[in-house]
Amino acid sequence: MSRRQPPLLDLTPDGEFRQPVRPPWATRVAAWALVVAVIAGGLAVAAVAFWLALMLIPIAIVAGLVAYLAFRFQLWRGVR
Image 1: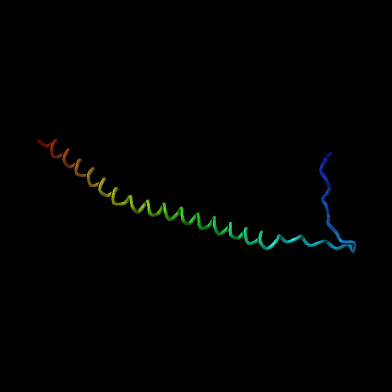
Image 2 (image 1 turned 30 degrees about the vertical axis):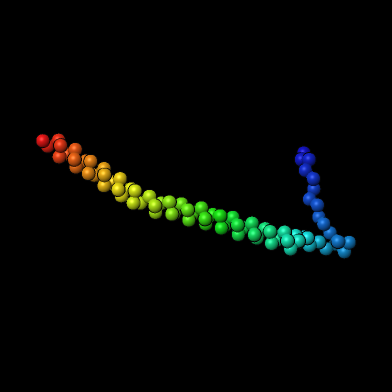
């Protein structure tokens, strides 16, 4: 047997359901401000990650060029 409480129905004396109480205006504004802040923070993190990836492209190209030249040097030295 379950020991759960039965659901609570909030009724008026006429037998109609009561409407839920809306939170105050300031609470609704604060909730929307929090949503906007989280979205803006996510966009900022994505922008920094994209900027970092773009800054690493020239470094990767130079590293590839150095590796290619080192490989070609090893081949040239091995021929002699």
